[in-house]
Length: 118
Picture 1 (tube, one colour):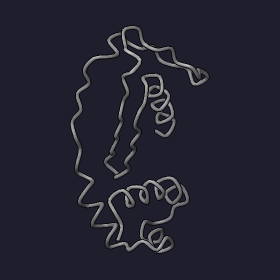
Picture 2 (tube, rainbow, N blue to C red):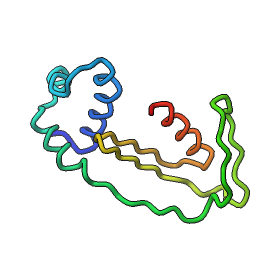
Picture 3 (cartoon, one colour):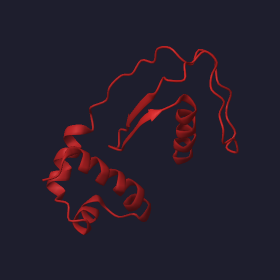
Picture 4 (cartoon, rainbow, N blue to C red):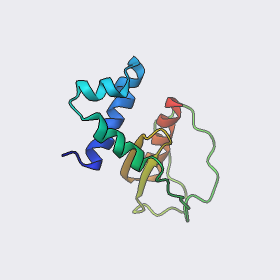
């Protein structure tokens, strides 16, 4: 039996490998031996679970746009270094991205990479 995490990983794999090649989700399920009816039910059950997020605390100052060539982002003044960020992003198309234990500079780099996908 497939867990929800397995199906999330499978859907992410489909978004990164199948969609660019124009492969349908049914064909992708068939070639990867994942029952389409199971995947379809999981997708319908989880796609509308969007949680509103409110950010408290750091950073208080605005961050200027970062150029793609910048590889090191300085820490924001006033943010304690032990603060770690857990980012969970679920998109309306079912794509789910989760990253734990991020520092603020790591979060900025991740957002830069995600902007490249848009």
